[in-house]
Image (cartoon, rainbow, N blue to C red; front, side, top):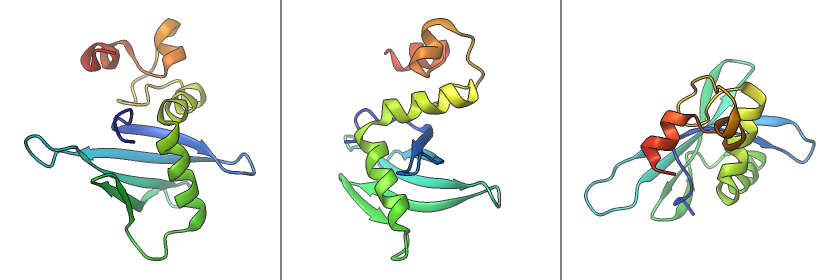
Length: 123
């Protein structure tokens, strides 16, 4: 599940087509282990990030037992289609979904990743 996921910003639409911004960060657990991930939702009303869940050993674990079902459903969608969620972020903001730098156009704009990020990730 996390193999296609990279640290960055992702937009996901809910069932009413409202867009929600998620921040995904990888944490290196050490040698020869898969990264652990945290996923936060950006709360537009307060400008703060709200922890939603973390992923460890392929399991999604909510930070709180009160994680909103809507957030959980959107995280599942993000994990199923990370590239699409990243591209939506890039299309809406004009910024690379990995590093948040401004996209210059061409191939990088359509992929959602800037040229430097593509080279660094060897995509």
